[in-house]
Structures are given as C-alpha cells and as structure tokens.
Image (cartoon, rainbow, N blue to C red; front, side):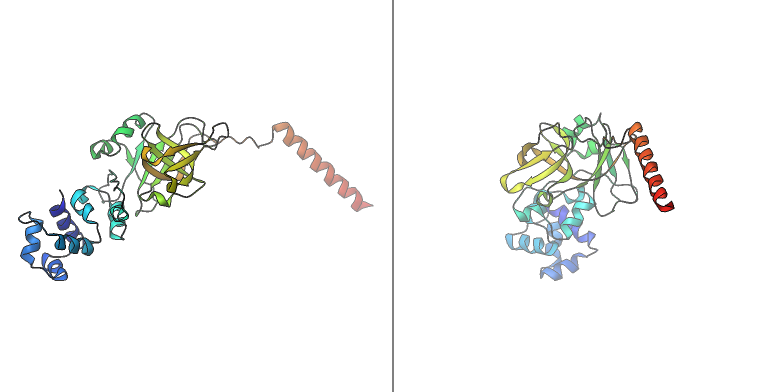
Length: 267
C-alpha cells in the first residue's frame, strides 16, 4: 500500500505544509501527520476527503506508487484525469527523465523489441534503453521511439524509427490515424487504426494494400502510442514518379506545344 507515501508526495508537490492541508480538510495537523508517517490509518471519510483534495481516486492513492510514475502521467492526474475514476485499470508507464527532470525519449531498437514486450512495465528495463530528446516536441507529453521492420507500412521504409506519443485514454484513439501498439502475441505493431473501443477491439490496417486488415481485442493490447513522425536513412519509394524516358517525352511534347503557339502568334 502506498497511501502514506502518496499523500506526502502530493502535498509536497503542491508546496503545501501539513498545516495547510489539515486546515483545508478541517482535520488536526497531528492526524494528517499520523497518516503520512503510518502511525494511524484513515477512515473512509478521511480517504474521501483526501481523494477530493488531491483530485486522485482512492484506488490510485492506495494501490499506485505515484513517486514512480512519470511527469506526464502526474500532470494528467493533476488535470483531473484518473482512469480509476472512469472504472478501468490504471496503466502505469515506466519512464526515465534527464538531469533537468524532463522526460526522455527512449529508443526501442529492432534488437530490443523482444525484450520490450515483456519488460515494458519494468522501470529497471526501461532505464537501460538508449535515450535522446527532440527540441520540437512538447515537454508536457511523453514520447517513445520504436524501430519498425517489414514492408507493411510502405512507403515508410523498413528499419525506420517511428516516434509515438503515449495514449493514456484509449477512447482518444482517432480513426484513420497511425499508432504504434504493443500487443501480447504480436509484439510491437505499427498500423492505421479504426477505433472500435465500444465493441472491445481495434481494427488495424497496413498502408501496403498487400496486407489484409485484422482485428485485435483490447485485452491483447498493453500500450498505445500515437504516431508523431519517423526517421529513416532511406528515401521513401514513390511508384508514381515518371520514368526517365517518360519525362523526356513529356518535355518534348511541351516544346512542340510552345512552338505551335509561337507559330500561331507570328501569323
């Protein structure tokens, strides 16, 4: 249980003293101190009062170590978003920060993908991933980069690095948008998504029409990241570009048209 640690952490995060919180909740400072130091346990009325004060669900205050989650998730809690309040299970994202307490972008390479499938929720595993930052991305959001493989998302080339923004509430998934999804059986997949949350699944499409769409139950999904951009050392293929001879023929036709117009003007 993390109740005592959490209320002390949230109080200090708000730069409040025990006297401040106790006065706001109409309780004795010694009572609050007893909760924070595990000398006494709160009754249901105190739990409800502290939950309302910090805007965090009771389940979260008790079951989740808030000192271990990233700044992005904490900011979501402070804005009033708590998945326990919506009746679903909280998804705690293991993350890392730099020396300035800014969220890193962790890199999951092709070699690391297998390990990530099992270690995604392990802070010790996440710590060993390479990290970097991109100055044009928001500091208030959480990003992670994954190396993709295969040709299902052409023209995005094989072995490209795709960066995603963490999606905490899956109801925010938008149709016909690209997402990186961590699944139980298929590992990391990068697809265009149809949101069928109400029916308990997502329908996934490839950009390459050779691959048929398929459905995946929400129970098989562990993480969802909204596609932001990709990095590749290869130029995307474009089958619509004209061949060299076709380009030459087009230029010659244009020359003939210009000459014909000039002849008419000279008449």
